[in-house]
Image (cartoon, rainbow, N blue to C red; front, top):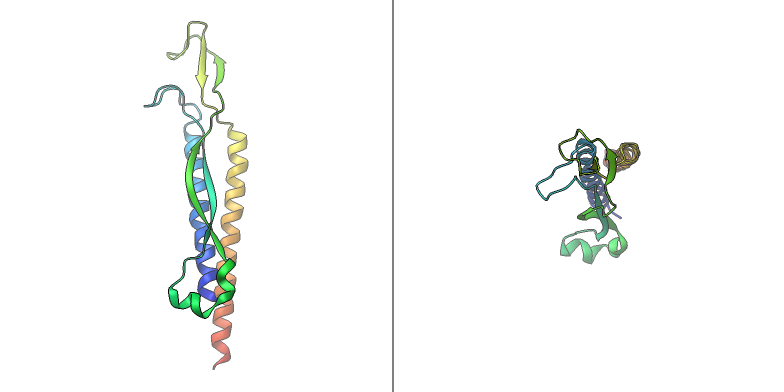
Length: 145
């Protein structure tokens, strides 16, 4: 794998983890939203990741057969969780049903915080990989001095 391939793979990971973090932030921000434009409570969202073959120029593919198996990550879709809403007894809430229960979003803030920490660690790992590739390239350039 060459320098540019490793940077592209790490960059795809950074982009994917950024999208994941934004989705998690949206889930936490809407953890108490009982009324949406679609009707009903907010529904938790999850990014769907898929492997993507490293995009290279035609010349790079011809020159380097080792990069054929290099894959980055792509956010294919943002999936809406189909779990039912939490029913909370609060008869004074404007969205309460006739029995006094309010349909709350299916967002568990503890789970979202754990996902946020995981996304942060994955982001940091990709930054570390980029910095290591950059340092190796800089050292390789120093050899020629």
